[in-house]
Length: 278
Image 1 (cartoon, rainbow, N blue to C red):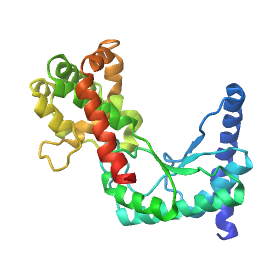
Image 2: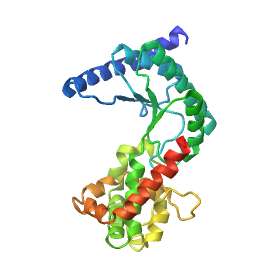
Image 3: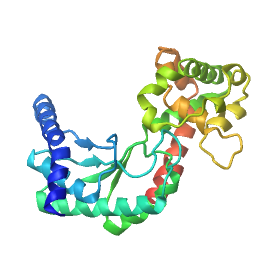
């Protein structure tokens, strides 16, 4: 890496690494010896990090004494909430492999934890890049951290809708509230969603959805002509509507746990764990 490029990377990221060091030491002090996993996230930066930039960042984190176990760079392409990757899959594969090589070197050179791994934020439902990730993990004998909280929340909704009755009514109500407050709910996630309001069904239309219509619109099955990625993204960021229901929402999950647990488990295992690791 040329000296000028290294200096520019340091100017861009050194202050952030120092701030991360202060935050880490504060957390470690409060944990009082109790273990915790440290992740450093860079995925919301304005542009992707190059592999040489990532090396500079890791060197700075090591200098700060941060025992990072996962690091989440920003990759090329769109990682929208709850839907598939949008971008050049071949370019993503090259970047991912380059970053794995950097992590392996940084572990040896800077004494970072041996289990340091890449973290893919908004990584759930990115089905088109799972084969490249799997190939890279096998090539480098590496692990990966894939954030999947959002897809689990959506599978809960699918399970409620599939159960029918009150479960379906709650799913409809959550959509209604998400639609009514869509500007508020979408604003914090503007960089990671692409929703065409014209493609969102009205709450009055959704209020008439059967269980099959609701689950077909929401479930991430791109072969289903009723699948609606705009509705799915809106509900992904509409979790506040469920929180505002108080005990009604978790109580419904408990009553509908058969359909909820089946959908959550099948989604995580068949669509995420199996393609990546099995």
